[in-house]
Image (cartoon, rainbow, N blue to C red):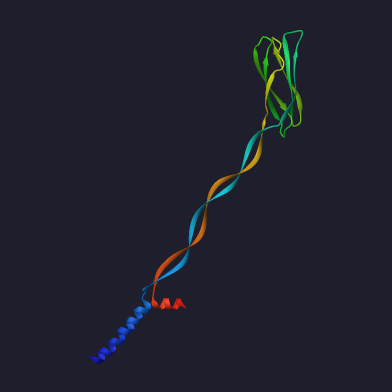
Length: 176
């Protein structure tokens, strides 16, 4: 029996030491890098086309009431000062000697830098001076850029605290 106890006690000690050294029992904290997708705001450059009116200049206006008949020629001299040619719309707002209000519109094509006299004739009565007019120039597309708020997703790595169980042997090995 003493012989058996002499064998069992060292066997139990060896098993106890192996359990303590090899079975994970100790909690250890460590840090690991994990991928993470974040959404961030930024300003994106956007190109767009904006229609802007062509520059022009009205250099003269004139009313020519015919003395031999009841009619009038009204004219506007306009110069295209822009960087594009096109059709200009000129609206004449006339008032006759009888007080009648008359509106007449004319379209005139003008090349870049070209100047022309645009004439309308009113039949039936003379026209009071001065008259009013409104010019609607053609438009041209101008390429512009602007900053627009937007979002994008980006992959980043962040440090995350983790815990795991290790054996006493691993703990002592990593401790050095």
